[in-house]
Image (cartoon, rainbow, N blue to C red; front, side, top):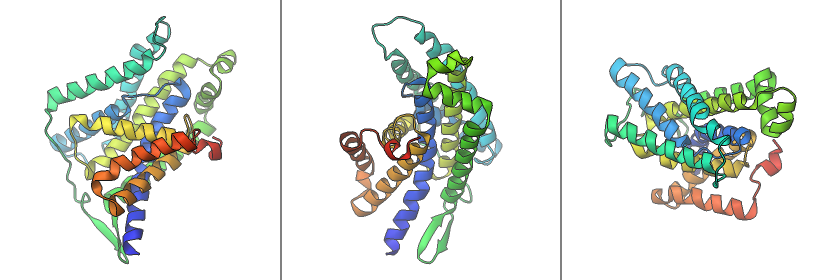
Length: 291
């Protein structure tokens, strides 16, 4: 029973971080209508920002949230404004040229980081990286618990922003019907730029929170882009609530798969879930959450 409870706790804590990663991608998907395949690479850049400030200045990774999130927000704005928005106005035989551009951006970011830091594995070791609190026979990783709380606060803050502010309502309006939103006087291009910045800042936060318990190398972005894509499909395209359930579901599936089948099958289980959802629940959890 302790093994089951331990796996459940690990899956939920990991799922909370996955949800934060997935919300960023699904927010961009909902407003822009494209999958950002550089999502994981943006997270990787934020992790390196955190590593640099920790290693050279001694900043705690959680304090570095105040640096990495604004930095990635600005990078996301730059990417949307100068690299993606111009493609909307260009006639092309490939309607998916924005998606292809995100693939290129991901490759460029990876190679720039590899040029600067090489391909060596790096890590951030803090006092809480390996600390744990025991309740009965179940251990709670201090780092993952703190990360889970941060993820909850950021998610609640995002929902408050989307529901209670004029800018948040404008983002929701563009996501629901871009043409009607423009007729109501909303600048859809500006909203897309801001949304790309928000999505990048959210995935930057996830990278920050993950770094104390994870290793870092230039190619780490690819696997996390894949996880974010799976979460977005699980939750239902464009559904922020669905992304939360998708993230927790993926975290639980990986945790139980690693415990009861084998660590080597952790990623494979996530991809099998992805295929099963496409086959049997094509709308993802959005079918039940409705938002």
